[in-house]
Image 1 (tube, rainbow, N blue to C red):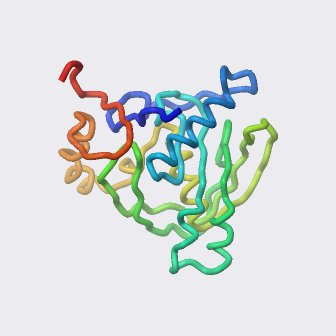
Image 2: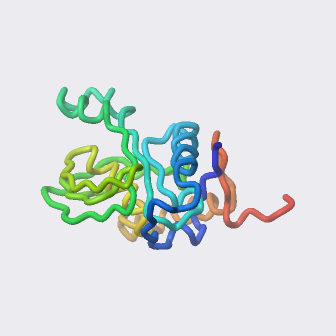
Length: 196
């Protein structure tokens, strides 16, 4: 089932997600719905807060990035097969040089900005079968994970922009909250008045 994606301005996007266990109600169905919702919106990642649930869960399918000609063959291969569910994820370490990359977000449509992040992360998480993993990722894959991880920490990519850039985007962000944006996927807007 395709779920509505929560738009910028909704308080759920600012909540730090809670850990869940394997008895979380209808977990398998929720994960299936998140995949369907993400693919319907042409996303590469989706976090539970973006569908209204303040829990530590996100899904990533990085394969759309594998076509990028600027990447090495090894990077393309790494991205092509990467499809993963992250439950109760915690980044243990971020290291390496910071580098900028143009990011967007399904909850903040029509806005893309360069965001600087560290190049390598070490993360502990559980998969969809609640098997524990600790892994190190780098490059574009680390960035996609960091972006989704921020969602379960109540952080949006716009928080990482300069104060000048934030001021310049203020009106556009306000319009997104009010539903004054064109999207081709289902969304729920916090300030859209009922009955309009």
